[in-house]
Image 1 (cartoon, rainbow, N blue to C red):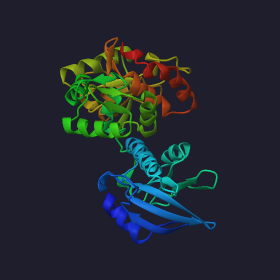
Image 2: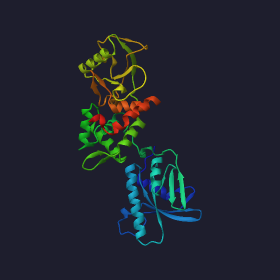
Image 3: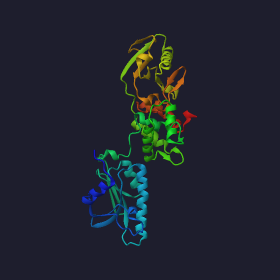
Image 4: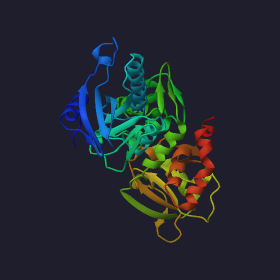
Length: 363
């Protein structure tokens, strides 16, 4: 897919620009808005739109993306342009307009809420002249995915950066974030942490001044829920231990410790009241053979003690807890797995939601 620079977007608009039913009568680059400011502080474009025998002039800011951070910065710039033009004593009224490759439904809602127009190159947009025009178009797919407002830092290994902020909301440096992830058992590189943090900042989920702080735990949790994928298993086997589940789990934990092997069970009853009968416990490990070494068990699909799932997915092992002689998934991982389940599981997850946002599992 094509990725556009701001210069390329402007060149396209100068050649051919339309947003039916509006007709662009004039597209002027870097218009003089009556300010003594240098050219780089002027709007990118002035666009005259005609509709229903009325012509209105828009001062446009062009951006290559529409992340929440970019959107808020653009709103401030556009307000400054319109105020400057109005303060110059011009007879003509000017209206703000943002132009980007793609506007999500959320971005369109934000623009509409503050009476600012926005048009993308994918076919979406809103054009507002208060009391006169309101043209709204949404639903066209993003033709420029590289400009998508949400980079996928909410899945797989890079999601460890997002997750750690729901365990500790403030850090002194990028290295401190990296070290905290490693301390909680995550395998990740420092460059990956740095790149993920930049995206979280663009999304206004994390802020960075003197400290790196979590700004929006609600939205962070929502993004993790929306992007959650169950750990992909290479192989699954259901087993019944000869001496019972507790003794079998103890053997798995002992093998894990002896062989520096990750193993973890997902038991939501550790954190919430779960209705229903006894079910096979999901246990994750990179090597079922190593984890089961020396244990007496039978492979069976009838009333098994555990279902062992082989996976290298780091998210399931991240921040695991040891209790009662075995390792258990973190409260956050257990919550996300429940949210990805059926109606009963989602209802169970609601018991945990406020505690996760309030960091109560990490006191």
